[in-house]
Amino acid sequence: MPVFTASAPGKIILFGEHAVVYGQPALAVPVPAVRARAVVRAAPALPRGEIRLTAPAVGLEEVPWRTLPPQHPLAKAVALTLRIVGATEPTALCLKVTSTIPVAAGLGSGAATTVAVVRALSGFLGCPLPDEAVNAVAYEVEKIHHGTPSGIDNTVVTYARPVYFVRGQPARTFRVGRPFTMVIADTGIPAPTAQAVADVRAAWQAEPERFERLFAAVGRIAEEARGAIEAGRPAVLGGLMDENHALLQQMGVSCPTLDRLVAAARAAGAAGAKLSGGGRGGNMIALVQDEAQAAYLARALEAAGAVRTIIATIG
Image (cartoon, rainbow, N blue to C red; front, top):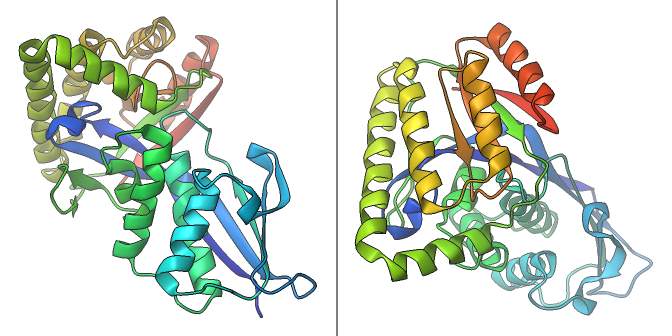
């Protein structure tokens, strides 16, 4: 049987972090510059039904998938895919996963890995799954990564298009009226989203009226940003990013390193900057006028302590 390969992009959230869990809209876009890749090949020397997993990033080297805990993200992705395609004893195979997406950095590494695995495995088995099914599997695996996921990571990664997302409603892609450029800067601080989401939930339960106001303000910003993007007015986004970051600070999900990089971006000429993702580390994003300014800003952010930068043109 032929080798089957699938990949999926990273993602960034432009607006709506944390508030999206409470029914507010969020905007997210794919970042094709970083990707997860899954490769499936037949393993005729192994017994029928055997699947060996290799994932260097998490220390797996040809590990039988059934020996992993059921809630291991890769094991869960494999099990759900096999169930959907009805392959109880598939042809023996080896599945290798690699990724250039930083882990626990708000770039959707978990969702991208799952999407790549589901597509490669179902394709190899002759039953390639439609986007809706891939998205459903990825959402189930996201529960392992994030506890109470919003659903935005798996959606934007699955469809690989800019997405307007409201929890509980069908995801809607949206048009970018005029391309714009962002610089993504990694703090180097691992930022598991589940803990930040849990902490915000506890704070919301303690001060529901205050946090509902914060969530509503973030939702308003996301709506304004979507309108500006569709209308081809990306310059409007800078002020909205600054406002959104201040609200996330009030929620308690920023950190000194993120705040330092946001300040450094603004000082270097960015039109606006904010954290992106769960916070407490991970990434921040900054809006620039063009790629020439992006290169300058990337150097400034690295000088300010970012461990890596990515330049992403949206649209």
